[in-house]
Length: 221
Image 1 (cartoon, rainbow, N blue to C red):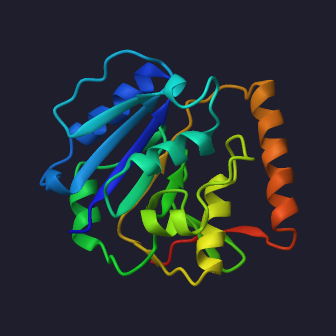
Image 2 (image 1 turned 120 degrees about the vertical axis):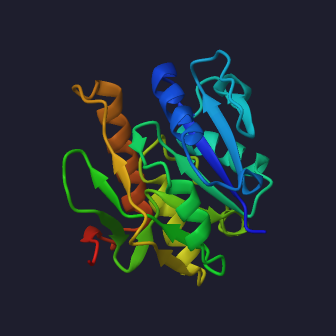
């Protein structure tokens, strides 16, 4: 059976509770095929009737980076595939049902187009000819074989880096045009740490892939 572990990450309690609620609202799901790892920096109890495990940041490192958290949770996962899940993502109530129904497990990388903010057209991100999983799922073995997520990143670009390395090793991908997620930022002015982090991560990405260009591709109707 081709099962998926969803890794839900947040240090904002209300946002994380909203993410859990979205999972609980899913209909017609074979929950024997779904696991959830809740990685939280906000502590507290996250009780839910769904199959889940709670991991607190301090169990990983004093101030863990996104790649450190993901790598820890990927190692924990007992399923064939893993999906990293932000707390500003919204899906409809048939999302998980459609994910399992449409799955083509022969592929290593599985991509869902997404809509940002108030835009109306879904798109996916490519780095040259390499598709990037902003939202989707990846074979756990492919992540391990590629050397895990690069922990020299703080937050940004680690997912793109991983997807490039998997595809450079002949990994295959599938884009599911009929499965869409909505990415809605909480808003507000980015703080200084966020700007510094993005600059650091962009520099590290460019040092590894100096000739690769990032581009958005609109979903084909």
